[in-house]
Amino acid sequence: MKPLWTLLVMLSLPASAESQLNLTKGVTEVSNRVYDLHMTIFYICCVIGVVVFGLMFISMIRHRKSKNPKPANFHENVKVEIAWTIIPLLILVGMAIPATTTLIAMEDTSDADVTIQVTGSQWKWHYKYFENDVEFFSRLATQQEQINNKFDKSENYLLEVDRPLVIPTGQKVRFLVTSDDVIHSWWVPDFAIKKDANPGFINETWTKVDEPGIYRGQCAELCGKDHGFMPVVVIAKEPAEYEKWITEIEAEQEAARQREQELLSMEMSKDELMDLGEKVYNSTCAACHQPNGQGVNGVFPALAGSGVAVDPDGTSKHIDIVVNGVSGTAMQAFGEQLSMQELAAVITYERNAWGNDTGDLIQAADINEVMNQ
Image 1 (cartoon, rainbow, N blue to C red):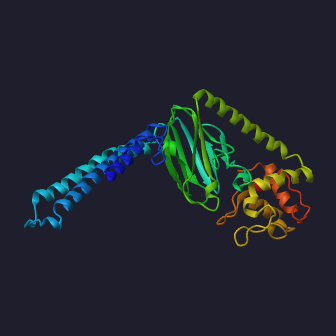
Image 2 (cartoon, rainbow, N blue to C red):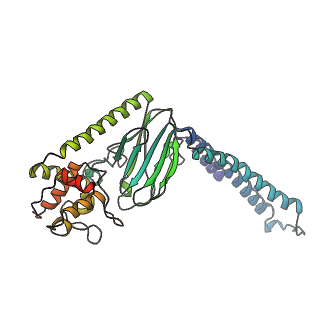
């Protein structure tokens, strides 16, 4: 009875959506279809397993050597061969029909109400709303002290971002997924979405969430040393709340662009540039080049006392590297990630911190000149 009891327990566990041994049931129609398909195939496999192993054990018991069975004397049976060919075929066809309809539904991105481009890069996500003039980066927000075991881990450890993706409920949202550098994978289990982000290609997927809420995911493709620090957070809002949010963000970003233009005619002092530059460097650059500017030997070049950061004639090159990145290396382009003021400040900081002392002060106008070349 023990094997039978164990089998019954295994069968009952997946029936609960709360079981940690089973798939997430999800919050969308497609995710529920995926879950139901999974359960259907699972139960079919269980039935097949019971029948096959049942027949095997019955044969072993009834025809064991101690009973001195008289073996049958035949070579082939056409009816049996037809049966064991037709029955598996019918089972496979029965499994293929719901699987195919589910896959077709998952790939149908037509008639979308909202289109968002999702771009992965090491190690963050960039979201761009096609119907509105809104785009932003979404980065890990978990404190470094938690990662370094100095603070207790929060409830959503490594699943927090500074700017979550916001979508409306009750509307079809189409995602165009791509990458700036290596292969990433945008994965939100509650939506039954896991779509690879390939550089140079655009993959499509979609969702329609009916209930407001916060839904979390991660990059599901090994993409480098900080792969584990690339979470996805999606907030689904009621349409009225979503429209209010998108209008506010659009106005906020337009105001930021206007402020940037005003900064082109202004100059910041060295103290202002160094203070802002240190903050930007520690949040954006220190993960690779280290807080002390020493870099990682053979991987990320040092900035303290060497390289372009101390080259007296390398100011324009330094700006170009930070703004446009370096193709074929891990050095990203920060021209779209940081404001011109932040770019000017962090380059000034790199040229004057850790004993570099070049005395160079970079202003927003210098960044604008390089960006418009």
